[in-house]
Image 1 (cartoon, protein in one colour):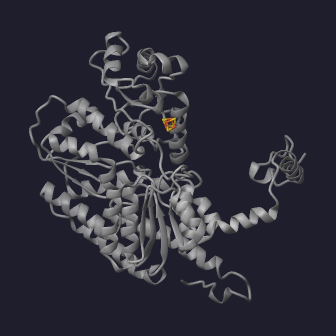
Image 2: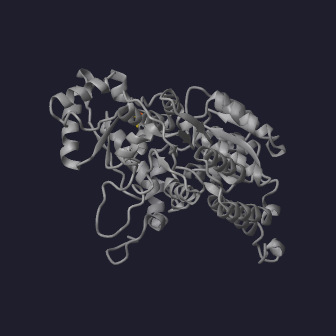
Image 3: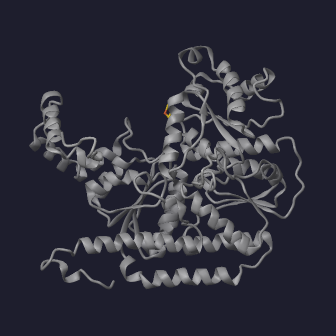
Length: 512
Ligand code: SF4
């Protein structure tokens, strides 16, 4: 065998050894009844055609590689942004294992969440007993200050009522009557993780704010939205607000929860918006959402409570950061300090330095609605063309908003918006109308392999590269990081396309 106790091979090399190659060949021939290599190749070629694209885009009965997750994942992420809060997902255990693994594969951190572990009997008779036992166990085992309850498909299909179940569990003594147990119904068969985020934030605010009158203060609330880059972004955001001298509360801040140090202590809970601050946020002057499509219901609720609200689309780059800072400065009654103006100038300078390499580049962009909007806007700022803009969880209203954005710049002229389409559809789009780069999550690596357009990983989930989320994308400083990430790919591609000695290397330049 190719490996022994003295020489243990990683799977990346192990399965290339002749023994394994032979084994795979025999398995293919014996069990998989493969089509001939010619017919596979012919089919592969057919999937690159306009004819196949039309069929693919008309597809309704199946979804292949959707760029979205289900609602409860967003709820679990939302709950992770509050002080000592344990997510409790009422439903089946496997779903919760998926949320935990999805989050921990991205952040490279433990992600805690518990399940009420409903099985067949609960599916028939209802999950009340699971809720009663589950809340009692969570309270006594994990010592939380708050338990945030959401639901999987299973609990929603049978119609379990969280409010009455939690009331019953409290009456049975699972947790004290005054213990914080906000809840959100998060049916996974509608919407996506951004709706789950929205529902859970609203659920937490309702828990603390319902029945209370507000007395308006001067502070500003900021809701970051579902953001895989929260570790870098939230810290950058707080730095900017501190520099501006603004009084603020981040409603939901998972930056410390998903970035605990290795110092010999396991932290099940770290950081997050304190429960006292969450309660006091009712009295803020206004609430700003950094991701409008993640907070539609929440902002309606906050507006109904009498606060001014405003929303953005994941502010990236120059103009979007300008708009955010101007709004914050208006609301807080503070000037934008000179240090931030200098940061802005440095970003503009850096973009101008690299303009020749960015102008006219074509991109496919996929991800959550706010991210795609933001990235298309930034790409147009660099002189690039966002040729395909796709959000599986985008709505018709999102598509209209995108069209307006694209129409505002000559670089958006040839761009098309695809709401509700999956990554297999994007493959057809990229095969028939090729682009230079694709921007999205790790799931885009199959698009990179099939179409040859290099993938720039800039949104959740990023499983196959490490630590991207620790660096901000938002603000002017984030804009520099964003710019450098894109440029690195541009230059890597230029080098790769010009590296054959005595053939293409006339452009294998030392100085770019
Ligand atoms: S879609 Fe439904 S079954 Fe699948 S992980 Fe989400 S909640 Fe569970």
